[in-house]
Length: 233
Image (cartoon, rainbow, N blue to C red; front, side, top):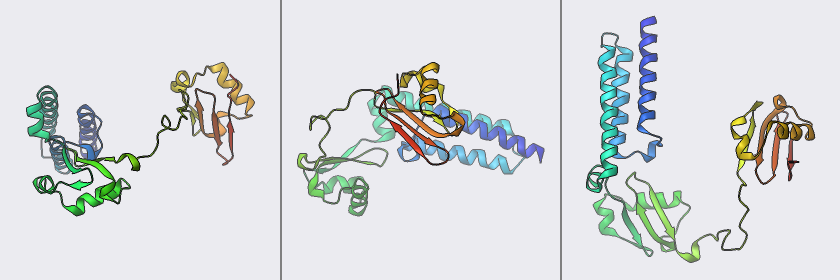
């Protein structure tokens, strides 16, 4: 029992480390080579967890080799566009000016149903409103709407917000996050003054966010909230 626990723990740590070395990607964003390596890692690690007769060192070596190969593939893909095209493929435009490119759809084996489903996932229901749509190498679909269908930006309507409006999480479930103090423009003394002004203690706060521009939002664990436009700095 103890042996199985130790082996499982070691393999779990090894696989987590391997995935971290491969970089941050969501499952849907994995390139073909990355997806294959991820599947192989899971298979290689799963078997020794169930069979103690399989040497653990052999499995760890296999994991390191897979990760090493994936890192080399990523490196050479970055340096050489031909290698990148072979291993990852190229983006393909499947809609041009509201018209389907049937030839490209057939070439990448992308059915109309697949395309319509992907468009609906982008809240687009009418192909004619799409200026262009590109099937990316990870299988996702990127679209550009026609100008008359695009949402106006803050710049276009002349209502550009000031810089620094990102809400930094300062307290999360009673825990103070001092790592974001600098981003929010806080110091310990300013933070204490704000908490005194709100008559709140960190342990009683479920969530507190602070914007550099001055906005404060505080939600207590009892469900009540308190917002302020100025943080008394």
